Image (cartoon, rainbow, N blue to C red; front, top):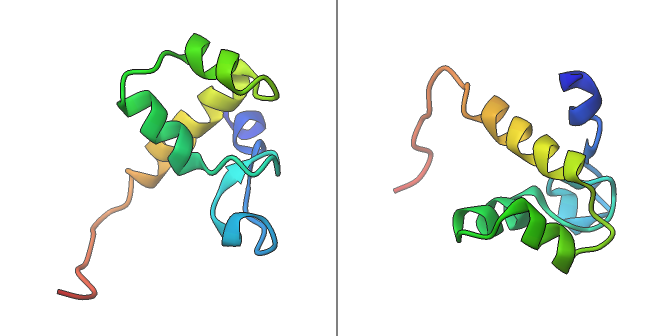
Length: 78
């Protein structure tokens, strides 16, 4: 199921400047994460963005979890 969820997140240089977004709908992953971190519930997000599906929210969370599994982070600028 995880692979199916991750297929909902796309990277296309012609959509949202290449940022990861949901199913090409021009909703960047970072937007959904910001909404969730601001305290919005999945239900509220789905109500405000009616073309999103609950699986899209799960895909965003899985994508973020996978990103956080990097082995190390290096500072490239100060």
